[in-house]
Amino acid sequence: MSWQKSLLNPLLRLIEKRQMANAKGPSSLRRAFEFKAKIMFHAPRGTEMEWFDLGGTAALRIGGEGLDAEKMILYCHGGGHVFGSPKTHSAMVAQLAKRVGCEAILPVYPLSPENVFPASLNTLRAAYDDLLAQGYRSSQVIIGGDSAGGNLVLALLAQLLQEAADVPAGVFAFSPLTDLTFSGASFQVNADADVILPADRAAEMMDYYLDGADPALPLASPLFADFTGAPSVWLTVGDTEILLDDTRRLVANMSKQGVDVQMHIERDLPHVWPIFHNVLPEARMTLDGLAEWINRRVGWADER
Image (cartoon, one colour):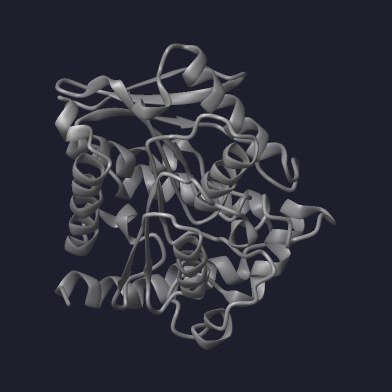
């Protein structure tokens, strides 16, 4: 365990988990996260960012010298479906893009409670379809996300498979939320150990998002989706997270469905730890490992 992690976890428990537990509503979470991300998270030197329209929504393109514009990571940020933005996650995605050697795009999607299921999924699907309409082949696109963003990209994959549409070259997720019924044992077992997510606020956030929709719908909870025929999938989660079983059970289901899926369970790391790449060696190691998987397992390195 790095000394940085030994300091970070208590700070997250003291500050982040307390703030998440006591927040009055989505607006306070949004303001706090935007401010902290601007101060704490930094993209590699030379990163270029620009806003443009993608599928009817604003999207942040990450480029820079040496990044292949013919390959693209389409990334969906997390935040419990109620907060977060491309700005809060752009530094982490830029770090990954540099390691992979490609460009990346983070679309803006509608947050809850102002917008409810399946508005955000529809927005992500429109962005993906627009990339293909612009001339990208599906083999040139990888989709990824974290937490609630992981929920959305996995739901998008399930939707594409269900409709026999072109699927991306690969899919990855950090600490994905896959079960909105919250039936995993880790949701209770790790309630105290998780240093960021307060388990007792999860139902409230999902009520914002679902607005009465069935949480067991496969496009709401990808845990219950059929991924037969999916491309390679890479997932990671910490062993002290309340969402640990969201990943473990999804991987078990995918394996039964014949999916080439990799699972990386890390010891005592916080929810979506790669976002702490500026301070946490384990975060940089995870980004290194994911980039290696993209370039070798998905095969992008062989196409250069």
